Length: 74
Image (cartoon, rainbow, N blue to C red; front, top):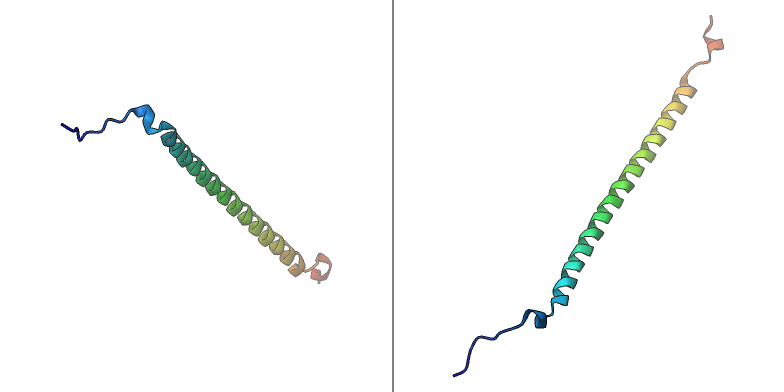
């Protein structure tokens, strides 16, 4: 009689493939997290640059539009 059940030993399956698959998944997750943090930092830096530029232009416009104290005295 022939058996239709095939017995596979766990060590013969190639557990190294399973480990490498989980490592790739872990590496992919780490890569995605690193990219997310990098994008957050880039957005934060861009926001700060825009804020500094706006503040500088506002200060310059206020300095230029304010009449000098000498011309105000009447």
